[in-house]
Image (cartoon, rainbow, N blue to C red; front, side, top):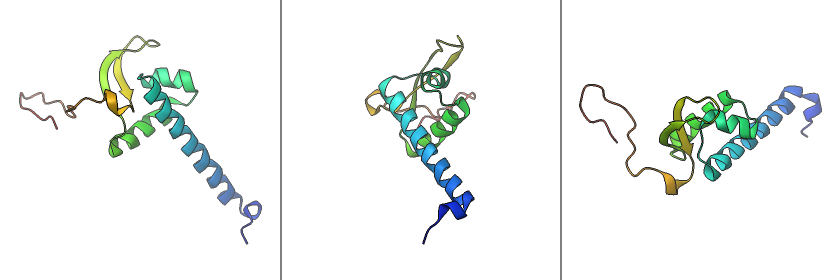
Length: 107
């Protein structure tokens, strides 16, 4: 018989896992609806930017997100990556690594 009230760490882990799954789903949906910077998404969703950064790293590994362009963040004014999870907006052959030696490292 499972009694989470007798094992608080198990209950806490389950709560954190649920929050994590919910946050990543919100981030995926928000990037799909409106391509934006991490900071813009933080303001729109109230999910901390370090969490968004971690989610982007995880989604990059699975190929479900892409930096579709560089642009000016409407909040910070800095030039930043604009991300999207919408496959229709993905670049056909994204450059994953910049080569400053003059060769080509595009994937």
